[in-house]
Length: 66
Image (cartoon, rainbow, N blue to C red):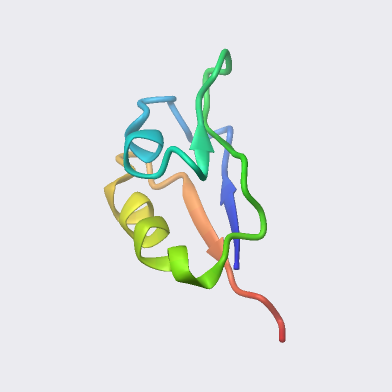
């Protein structure tokens, strides 16, 4: 699965980074970046938690086309 953060929507609140710091990072940006793509299937639960907890709904999961 691939994870995408929409930089036009993300406000950089850091919720995703606190839930999954091995997948998301804020760094010096004003929006979160995905630092692991593709994301292994075994991390789906933590990614789905980050998606559901994102107050701006800026995170999307794109399924592999296998």
